[in-house]
Image 1: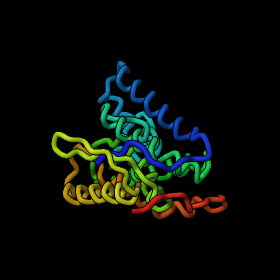
Image 2: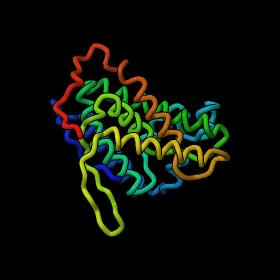
Image 3: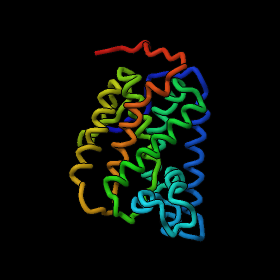
Image 4: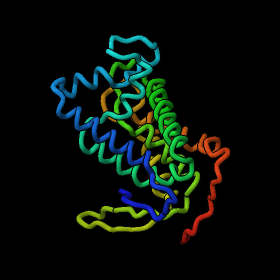
Length: 229
């Protein structure tokens, strides 16, 4: 199940969402072209669980700073493509609901919660975590609460055939977080390289639980012209 757009128009130009995508892409190009090499960059600026828990490291920047630098780094083309696709589909509506500046703070907050969720699940790990997934997960959690009935255009793979269907966001996002939770508990144990499932879970929970607080003082209209089954 791969979403590629939603039927949920915005009332603003999502400058922050576009800017975040542009920054992530620029950093990824730098990672690919830098003479330092991908491995050295990741070790220097990725968020290492043991470091951000203890607040000590031999990285060139402080552990607290790596929590933010890690949000804009990616390990490969599919990694960044997936994250930016989800940010583009769902981020513009959360930016519309929160406003530009508040959305940026919400995005960074979700990324911080995500990083520490992963760190607390792997306290002794020295494997760097990178990617916008945690922050984007916060956006998905917020979208689930605010726009559960918005229709999302989704690709369904049926063997050699691809079917395009429109389903409520609640189906897409509950399916997505269900996969994260399942994989998170399957992989729980000694830290190994791979997907930081608990970062996804923590970021999603942060968005789902706190989005109403971020909306305080905003003139948010939840009712939209959705069509139901």
